[in-house]
Each structure stands twice: as structure tokens, then as C-alpha cells.
Length: 135
Image (cartoon, rainbow, N blue to C red; front, side):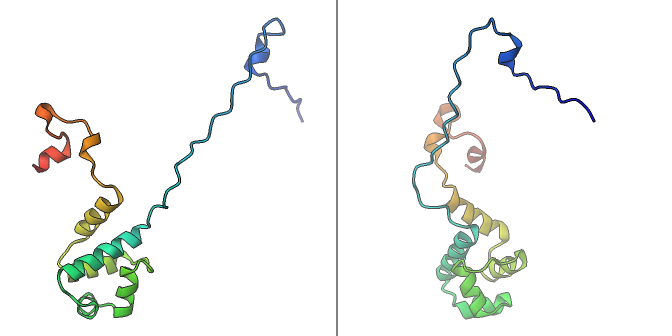
């Protein structure tokens, strides 16, 4: 077919007259400190749904009936055992008087706590960015 051409490394281009370079150290792998694994989204969402239901003093049966799902399924969703569809989440959050955006925001706050101390502040020491818009 064809001739194989040798691959030339940049070190070889200079020829034999150049002094050999010391071998570069291999990159060190990033080691994460041992920590608990991140929770799954469904687990945190289930916790939030259960807390919202308790906060509203609602029973599993009442919320499940309004959402149109079984009590057993709602219980499994709240315990993070089931991965509910967006339709089921919309029905459950609606039964609790919430929206999907409300649920997503509450879950996000659990997964990524807002730490303003590590963020740069705006003029006069006030928080900048989206936080300033909310104030």
C-alpha cells in the first residue's frame, strides 16, 4: 500500500547535537478529599416534597389523591426510591401549591448552598450580581 513514515518527536527535530531534556513529570491526579457522595437529585427532591407536605400538614393520602397517583408511589418518591417523570413532579408540586420552578429552586439550594462570603461584593460592600437584584 504505502510506506510507513516514522513519527518524529519535537526532541528528535533538533538532532543529536541538542542535549537531552529531562523527562517531564507526569501530571498528578486531582485527589478529592474523602467525603460523602453527592446525593441524587431524586433523593433531595423527595426530601423537599416531604418537608413541604409536612409544613402544610398534609397526609400522603390527601396529596396523592390530588396529584392522581397512589399513596405508595408518592411515598417512594419522597424517599428517593423512584425517579418520577416531570408530569408526576408537576402533579405533586401542584397538589402542594407549588410549581416545578419552586421545587427546582429548593432542591438547588440544598445541592449548592449560597455562600456570599466567598463571592466578590459590589460597591459599598453589597453583594453583586443576581443577589443584588433580589434585594
